[in-house]
Image (cartoon, rainbow, N blue to C red; front, side, top):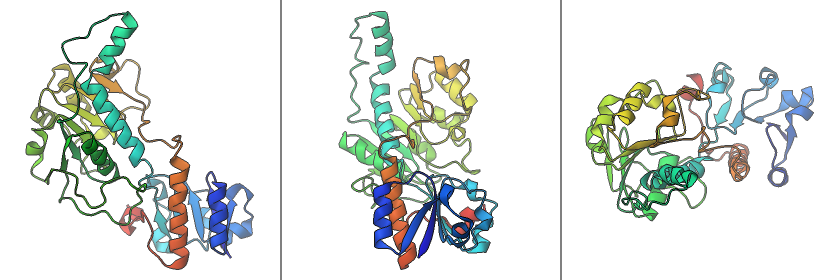
Length: 330
């Protein structure tokens, strides 16, 4: 019997199904005996538990987080331990945030709410009535979040352009909520690659950052990139705050190089109340909630990945979201 240790919330129907289909038992870490810990072949967790070194039979770690740097320094590759993350579980919620923010920015929802609070009846000059249909959306990075955003945007009649390092490719080996995304990479109307950044930025109504943070792309959006955008364009950042140079963004918003921004990720956690971005009338600030483990669908998606990867591991099949040795050794 395969022992699986779970240091996470267990979805009982998924647990029963996994144990029924396989000669396996899923044991909460809090209930595990030293013998169970020593014999466990699979660990389900968000971070490496204190007893990780005692798991001498461990061969697979399944994270319920997308981030995986918490596994660094544990010598997993040398021990022959494979690991997978939960990439894909936040794609739909972050894509919905992207769509909501584009509509709210286009229609100046913040302005309408200020009017409501002040009891002002003003239909305005059309800024409250703009539709996103026909606008051009640029997505920088085309993983799961970008692909689901592209699908929703195309449904709304938007034109989608994509910026990637080396072009758009079919997406394989990654978890996707069934019926979502763009696995074949066919939805964008135009794609741009390294060296074409200025051409990509110059024609956009919205720019969405959908790339992971790395040493190579920290500060990738600075004064040069912001000035390349149209004065009527908006920036959305649900990815990571340091992708954007903060001083350049504040100046761009102050001096109206761009029309506004929606920011879910930041340079400071929490954002101090005196920070100037809070008070800018053309900025929407949210507290890093575009994708969250509090979503009503989070646990279902995580256990879809868990069930697939346990079956793949025990039966010798492919795994979803498997981390490379370089990623685990970084």
